[in-house]
Length: 58
Image (cartoon, rainbow, N blue to C red; front, side, top):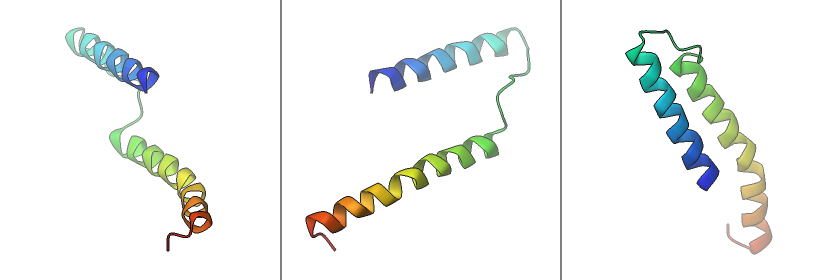
């Protein structure tokens, strides 16, 4: 979790610097980032369902 928070903080700092320097961010547009979030979520669905089924929760 600490790595995620550090990564988020670093991203915010760099975003602020880009904004102050009026530089366009090389990051993908927000819609692409939402797609990546969906991919990560989908990647974790099958193991989660398998765990639920193995523990008897239906």
